[in-house]
Image (cartoon, rainbow, N blue to C red):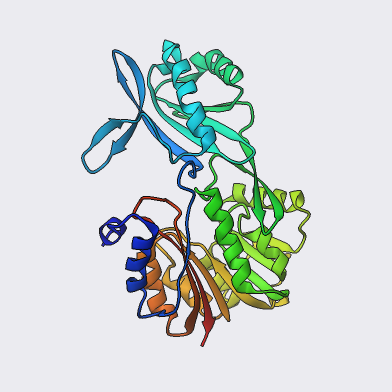
Length: 357
């Protein structure tokens, strides 16, 4: 069953009511609800273009009907994106070199930065000077891509700050990194995790799928030591840099899959990437997982079942339910929250704390 078919409702209250029924076999207490700002909450927007004799227009593709629809107003995107979209479109329409064979645009905004990526079906080398001038005229970070080529005008990396319980955390990442699509909700998720952890320094934390350290950095304040894993080499590089930016020294980042880490815990084989790290030096009390929409694999579930406390952040209630069916045998849910990551859509983000029975 698809998420859209299950969550036909769009308001947070309606979605939460359906979700509560979905998880009633695992949790019958109060679910916390966290709403999103009504407008200008989405930090990333990916649009295609529609071309006709009158010029080019922003468009969205409906995969179900295989049609493109012209987009005139997106009030859910970040204010920076919202304000720059018409300015960029005007410049593109005024320059035939820039709009010819242009098929897509990606906008990314943070509290501190903004970037635009233009996607072409032609060699972008021939319009390099025009792209450079566009970046200067609008004073934006601009990236252009075509098959096998990428041009950067300004900075490719973006800076971000999160305000977590009146403390500021700073990040740097590239436009290629996965980022939480709703900054306000991202801050609420982190604050909710800190709340359920309660006061006091815990033992050690293991985090899987850590990315560039979005959750890792603020949560490190609650633990003696943190071990965080991630497969993407670039994410690890940013995570290490972000530790330096925030003067945090109790985190170890390793580039390793969850399956390989499980083998390392079982001492089934030795890994070169762990040559300077002894897993026996850690005393883990908590594990944090924020998996992709497909949820956790059987192997990862077997790994996390060994931990006293599991913090599970999920972008898909259906895969979460499948995983909880197994985890419920060894753990009990003590806290459950819903976050309206994509307001006025069927999607719902979930946060769960499980404790060993």
